[in-house]
Image (cartoon, rainbow, N blue to C red; front, side, top):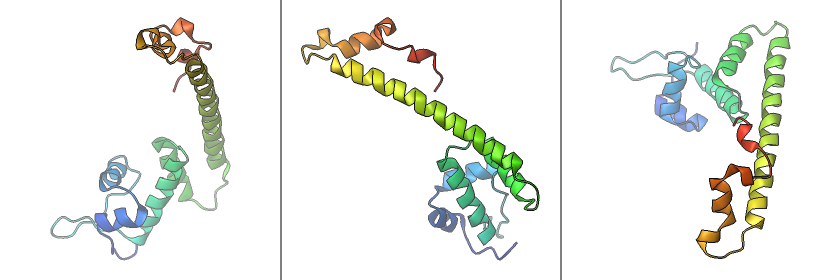
Length: 146
């Protein structure tokens, strides 16, 4: 490992990651525990910054922590076949597509509810009425998991 030029604050700024998030990644073993100075300050190397950027990008794409951990483990073997990583990405794509379908259903229902609004007194509000009585919904979006 290279020189440890980064404090946790430096690492946070360089990676656009909050300090508590970095600590969480260390606790969840996505980031290795860094060496500390005599005063107990965490010190990070360029490799740590690169790893954190990888984690951040994977999180932005919605990958769960366990899958990121597995991809990091697999990436330590660059000559191995990429089938396992492909499988993780295919699974994540299916999850994203499921979420998109659910969001489209929710969008449709919200548009319908808003379209039925008559702009009258709240006691006659179709939105409040529909939220209070799920049977008034046009679809069964409650059974879909978030």
